[in-house]
Length: 220
Ligand SMILES: [Zn+2]
Image 1 (tube, helix red, strand yellow):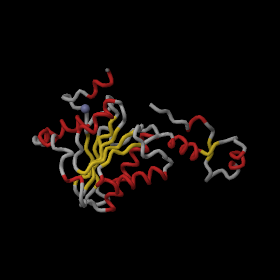
Image 2: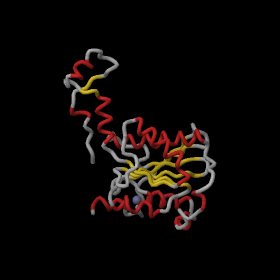
Image 3: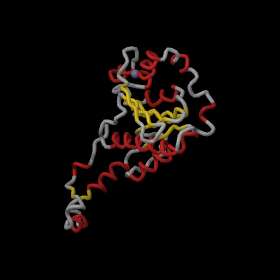
Image 4: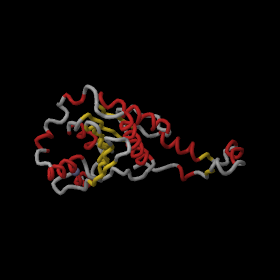
């Protein structure tokens, strides 16, 4: 678990203290915003994304870059975003789960985007927990699992409106920044649905499922 470095230095708020820049120039104090960016720049984010996810991924990268993250195309990321058109093949979550890499599922579902659950392997409910809960109210879900990732839905035009795609990118970036800043992202144990309109949101909880063995990872 990474620790924030922002508390190690005295800081100043440039909007309130007009004398501090001279002190900062002598190294007496540190601009808190620059320290925050320094801390954020140490994080690497990876995107395992279908080609049809590019508008959301590009918008998310842009927001993260503006927020001070610089390593946004990592193949060995500190945090992996799995972005798919339709549900992703569950094999795409095996490696991050096995190696303990925090990961976030993002699914474009026609004209809306589902984000979550955000998973810290062994510590928070996983995609398997999500599937088991979903099976309870959608009995066909287990049969569908084997077809995820094989459909042609991953290519071609999307029904997702551009403002909704950007709204989803904001939500994704906010959760990634929460992780980077040592906070608990909202999609921990939850899913968030954006759309069809850009200002429409729906959220529901995804607790640990008793039939899933993911919480045993922490004890392994
Ligand atoms: Zn689980």
